[in-house]
Length: 475
Ligand code: UD1
Ligand code: CA
Image (tube, rainbow, N blue to C red; front, side):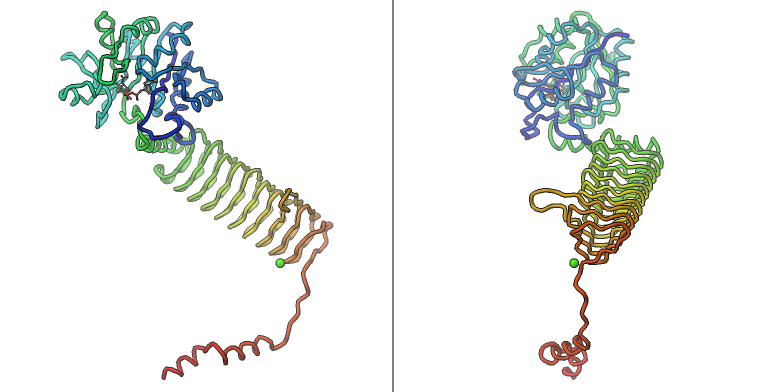
């Protein structure tokens, strides 16, 4: 097999994005736009991958450094040919085919690139152009072919005649050439055109003049080759990526109820027979096991979910682990550092933060548990609150196995509740509770006989009328 280098162009002004951020760092399905062509270059096993960036794109520089991707710097954005030239030194050691990809074309699939390269190799082409036939050729470069259907040149929309502008086949921007010929020929390109730029597309004319063979391969569907120039394009590309990801999950055995309105980041994993309902967001490094139900409006960010877990509507779970068979929500908030054990239950309006709920533990209603361990099979009553913060530091609450915590309890941390203890409803617990003890902290109840009736009578005479009185006064 021939050696292959992928050169990903990402310099240029991208003024149409109206953004202070580099265009290719905008987000699609949880990752920067440029991560997709990088990933695709890896998928086709490019021997070298180099990104061309602008000198002033420090955000892109940082990203590429973090991602460990080689970069070449284009000092001034003088056009696509000039951009490729900027990488000549970086690729000096390389001999083989240079596949030029665009940093702003994220949807192109490895399969399409492989077919394109196969066509080039079949026709022994020195230069290849990946073309497309979008419904609207817009500002793309037009592919001019002769009567035999052979490519003659590429004319940029701005430089095209009205007749040429009617051509539907356009340049996707993805071009491939033999390295030696490529860098030699780039020097012949001039900038006598509407934008006064050095156009990479001029390579077609140069190759044909020299009797080299040029392949033009139509990639389908055209949408896969769309470039992102504006935020409208970005939203459209994100929509297409979303559908692609969702359909992939569906083909792998997950039930995606509505593949248009389910937001799953690239790289999230979902086990077989798990169902994801609409308007859920499965983000970051989230992993979901088998036979789970993720109801509508759930947000999972960097969450690890076991098998047979049911996450009910509108729950938000971040950087936490949920073990097999647990039931969470609706309206639960699980904040970073939490662990929900096997078959544990976290109900509505329950907030957990750095909280471990062991196997079978329950907190079903209106509760805050922060910096807390809840033992196995322990029941946390409605309205329980751990007071873990004194305005300066955070403190821990440790609750043993099989404890019963009555409703409306405050646990003032640091505090421990021993195994099997019972806490009476409405208690404020400030001291450790021994195992199997009953803890109660509330004033004794006083009943004043007949007080309420007297109170009502007094008030109804002076102020309010009861319904019967109202009726009587009308007639
Ligand atoms: C280019 C093509 C056009 C094609 C279109 C597809 C040329 C002359 N035109 O036009 O035929 O239909 O792409 O999207 O090649 N870039 C640099 N440095 C520069 C200029 C551009 O790195 O100086 C990069 C951009 O980041 C981008 C790619 O090259 O990734 C294309 O640049 P862009 O300005 O979008 O080119 P178009 O005018 O759209
Ligand atoms: Ca109270």
